[in-house]
Length: 459
Image 1 (cartoon, rainbow, N blue to C red):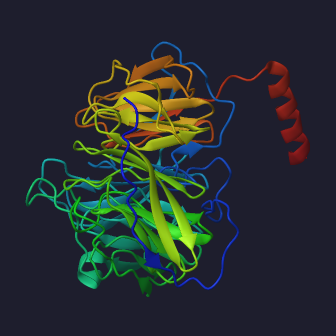
Image 2 (cartoon, rainbow, N blue to C red):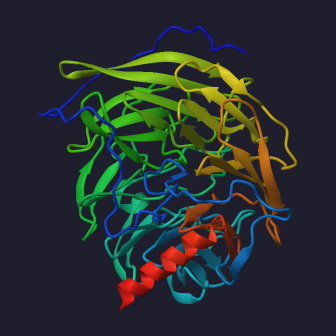
C-alpha cells in the first residue's frame, strides 16, 4: 500500500538557542568505552546497531556456539550493557529489584546492588537497561527512581525520584493499569536526561555526578492523539535544523527539546496512540521516522527552522496495515528501515526511509508473536516472543534468512533486546544471560599473524 497522501501538520515553537551548531548528526560518545562495547540501551549510538565486523554471516544448524550461561539475576525484561570487561543488567529477586554486574568472559557475578522494591503483577521485573559511562552505572527502576552506582563496586552515589521530585507519570495503559517505567537513562556529557512526563517536567536534565537538577522542560499538548504523560521510549540526542536536541516519543507524540536550555522546540502528534508509545524514533539529519502500534502507523517528518521558529512537515504517513511497530524497535541501514510490523505480530518488513515505499515484507517466519531487532555486520538479529532467534540479511533486495535457533528455557515473554559486543551475542532471558560466540572463524595465517603480534607486544 502506498503512503497516505495527508495534509502536512506543523507545530511551531520559538527557540532560545543563541548559536547554531554544525549541521551534522551528533552521535553519542560515552567515555571509557571501547569501539566494540555495547554500553547502553540499543548500543553506543542508541540506534540498535553494532559497529563490529568479522561476524558469522550464516548460523550453523542449532545456532552459534554457546560460550556460557549465567543464572540468578531475577525476573525482568532489562537488556544487557557491556563495557570494560563487564556486563550489567537488572532483575527482581525475592527481596527487591537489583542491578547486577557480571564478568564478560565467564558470567561470574561481580556484585549486585538492591535499588528498589518488587511488585506483584503479571509481568514482574525491570524494563530499563543500565547506561555505563565514566566509572558510573545509571539505571531506572520500575517505579521511576533514577539511580547512579559506581561501576566497580555497585555502591550507590545518588538517587532521584521522577514521581516524588518531578510529579512524573506514565500515559495510562488499558485503563488504570500501567506497565511500569521502561526508560533507560541517557548520559550526554555532564548530564543525565530522563522523562518524568509531567506537563511542567516533561524532560529533566540532572548533573551526572550529583543528581542535581539542571533544567526541566515545560510541556504542551501536541494535539488530540495519544494520552498525557511519558511513554515507554528512551531519549536520544542529535543535531537537527542547526540545533542540538533531545528527541523523545512521549504520550502525545514525538518532541524535540533544546539540549542547553530544556526548551520545548517542536512536537508531532500524528504517530501517537492512547495506550503505549514505545519505540524510539530514527533520526537522520533533519528527518525523523517514528512508529507506534495499537492500530496507529508510522510517519516521516522533516524539521525546519525559520529565524527562531521550528517547523514540522510530514513527508508521508503509513497506516497501520502498512507498518506499525509495536515495541521491537527500528533499524536504519543504508536508506532502508528494517523492523517488525503488526500488533503483536513482528513480521519482518523493509521500507525506504525517504519515500515509505515497501521494499519487501511483511514476511511470516517460524517465530511467534512480537519481535525485536538488532543489527551487526550486514545482518539483522530478530528475536521473537517465543524465544526464536532469526538471522536475516540487511538488504532491501529481498527477505533472506541465514539461520535460526531457540533460546533455552524460555518461560515468559522473550522480549529483552539482543546486545552484540566483542564478537559475542548476549541474550537476557529472565533469570539468565546467555552468551553466544558469533565471531567468524579466521584464516590460519591471519590467526598466526595476530598471535605473533601479541607475543611481540608482550615482550
